[in-house]
Amino acid sequence: MSLSETAVDRAPSSGRIQQHRRYLMCKPAYFTVSYEINPWMHKADPTDTPKAVRQWQTLYDTYLSLGHDVEVIDPIEGLPDMVYTANGGFIIDGKALGVRFSVGERRGEEQPFMDWFGSHGFEVVEPIATQEGEGDILLAGDTILAGYGFRSSIESHREIADVFDREVVSLHLVNPNFYHLDTAIAVLDPVVGPGGVEAANIAYLPNAFDDRGRGILEERFPDAIRVADEDGAVFGLNSASDGRNVFISPRATGYDAQLRERGYNPVHIDLSELLLGGGGIKCCTLELRGGRS
Image (cartoon, rainbow, N blue to C red; front, side, top):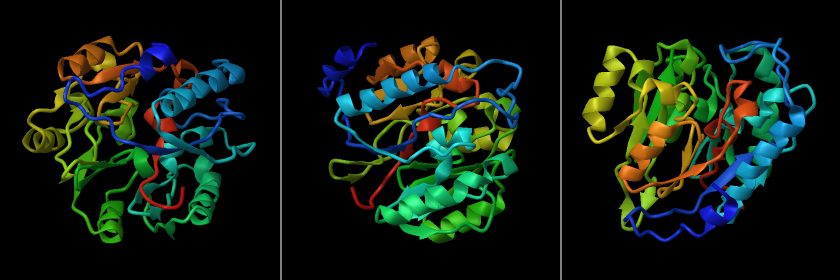
């Protein structure tokens, strides 16, 4: 979908209401696959950094074309995964919880993200337990959904609840291809809409979770979109939403149809080059809630 096609489809004719978003992104100027820390990364496969930058730029430009604000953190040479800003923290009401990565290759990113939050008006909380930001922590209505099993510890969930004073629902990830929660769940509805906080709609990949996790999701989100394995395998669920427009991989055709049936507007963004590092649209998109614009 072109930018012009995207930009003209802002009216809430379906009843879905577009909400303003403020995001943090990082240009993949130093993107490459120089190590292997997830099943998607293979050092033997060549990467094309200029292509990654072009694809990232399309996502950036699309957000702006739809009226969203995008902040940018400077990339740092030697930290190729900084492009995946969702892993840089978790922010609600101007309070930013930093991250503590489980893998040594990414620990150099921790302080630069916390420094950025502090210099942009956020109250920064340095974490104690291992967790990887919005990669494994998602805000759904008033509730925080938190993943564990591969990259974030379940011990971090108590810390998250204490920092933000919200209910935290723990979900066990069991499929190594979906090692972060944001590869297996997408929050579709706005967190806050007209009249106050709304109950969130989500989409999720059932096979990414254990039986208990599936039961929790079925009980709490009975109307959720259940996404097929083939759409999950192209990182279809690693998507961002403003409540009306849902930014997804063009290869997630089944998910596209499901979204349209529910009145959402799928916006296709190809980040195939960045998928070589195990990241997609949501990985490149950290939501900034509060702070200084």
